[in-house]
Image (cartoon, rainbow, N blue to C red; front, side, top):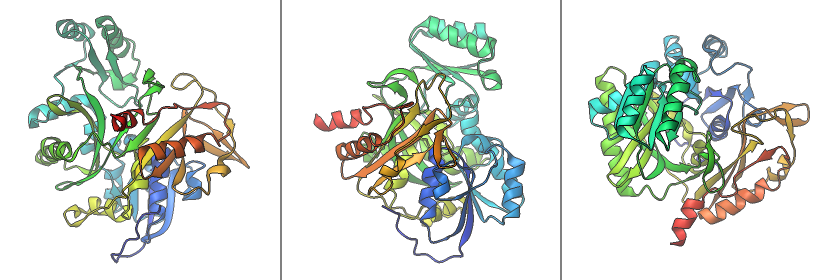
Length: 438
């Protein structure tokens, strides 16, 4: 399903999407359907994105080159996909030369860029989150762990490509994580300071809100699957699949999240001189005491974006522009009454060492299926061949009237893809399907 065409007027525009993952492919697919669009570019893009946008060979963190390209091509609007360029100040730099962008400026992006900042911010503004301590000294951090016991969570303060969070089941495991970060430099500067926090029991969910600095508009829910193996076994990954909506996030819970987390976040950031505009992604733990914040992300999730965009009935581009323009209070979004489910296909060996440049065949077999998308996350085209270059490589996404049908449709498509060097979990959606059977 394509999104509804926008009915409002307005000049057509050139849009640049920054990034190269499955999230950016989903955004490009959604934006490409907008009648407001004149031309769509993506930097650097990938083999799948090339079907929707003109890919330009500029890295997502090459701020100078991105600004230069946007000026040269007279880009009207930039959508920043990943967190790195947001933390580096890409939105600030674009704004300084008069180019509008979707995403927070560097000061507001600290909500993801520094876990220590976020924990202190939550304390200042009464936002429910786990008890914690901040440390740069390993011995002090270990004393905190011994005083509080395990399970306990150790987090690198900065951006660590999704690998900087250790859930330690034993005190010894926590101490090893502390040494790895503070003494061995496992995450470089990102781990020069750490947060040690209380382990929260419950079920995780993702809650999204579009924000314009003052107003927040709920923008969907999802649940992902972080562990690499079936049955939620093995090490954590960047995400092996997701589904949306998340039925566990009831209307009552959503209202609580807006009241106790999202709106206080916007008010607090505004009061501290860093109004937040963009998408606020709240990673939640739904506990016996109500929803508590695990972390903020300041961009769409990956693979959550791959299930949000197909469900979105409204034209996404005016929504993103409204967030950048500060006019979300006059905006509304509509959703398809359907379930979306995404299965991530990863390179064998991920999240450890994996082979690169392996060929993927059979993608044509999925191309003409209704309500089915193969979003590329780590691919390049070499002549007539599509080859895998990353750990998480494809996001096979299906939309259907219910989760069981979406799951069946997604896995049928997975089985038509010929990639011996890839693998996937075979139980994406197990939790929502088990809940439906009870």
